[in-house]
Length: 97
Image (cartoon, rainbow, N blue to C red; front, side, top):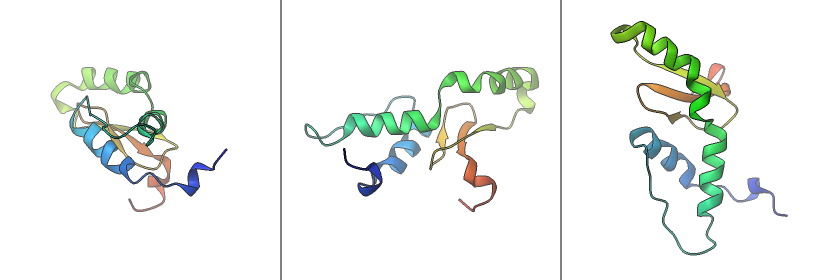
C-alpha cells in the first residue's frame, strides 16, 4: 500500500478554502484520480458538525456579540464550518500559518 505522504494532494488547500465559503463543493475529475480519497482526507481532518456543538451553544448564548470561534484538530489546513466557525490545526498554536 503506498504511503500517502509520497503523493501530496495539492487540491486539499483549495478544497478546504472552498468549503469555508460554501456548504457544497463539486470535486470533478476522471475515474480513479483520487476524488473520494481527497474528500475523505479533508473531511476526516476537519472534524464534523458534532465537534462544534459546544461552540454553537456559545454562539446562541452570546447572540450578536459572537465574533467567531474555532475547534482545534490534528489536520494540516483550516476549514470553515459557516457562521464564523473554523476547524484550525493544533500546530497553529506554535507555528505561523
